[in-house]
Length: 266
Image: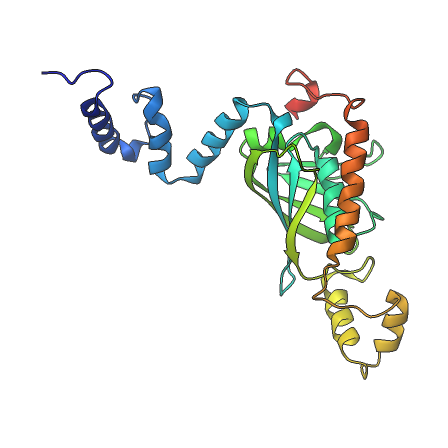
């Protein structure tokens, strides 16, 4: 006797079949209601990315946000921030958010390395190295759809501040909140033009000890004391609100990137 369609027996039969071919990662035989559970049971990040793609495909990215963790590489204890940004944010917009969250001053060039491609501000006169695609022409939504949840961001090619970017989750936006939004973080980021990681280490050592031979000079250069444990949340919030206001004011007039836009094929 065959189990009745839609019954509990059918559910168990499908899961037995799933367990038999689990090692093949073949979920196509399952009815639609059971594919989601099959993805979960696989326990693979690859399937989690696929599920996230399906979620975004079924809901407009305008109504969704990404929780993004930003961590400065090669610094211990780690300097990091967590922010929420709309999925419609371009990589250029994410650059602005990172600058605001880490209290950088946007004095220098930047670059995102995503897979095998680089995004930044293209320079037609610069022919060396890999091609740089325009960071204004690719959104977080498109990166998530393509499975890029981790990538890197470099600011100031002299000091070479390299950051690890992790798209931790995506979720529905809260209409009562303004985005981008600062969530939390730890440790103060290095000041501009301090000399990269070696210079920052020397700077911290000198600023921590009034007897250090460079303490007076570096304190004057920086403009006052430096507390590595104070991330200055109030200033971060002010800068985030400035970005949110700018986003609201430009929202109506900003051109919308559509799937037919050639730039999305970058």
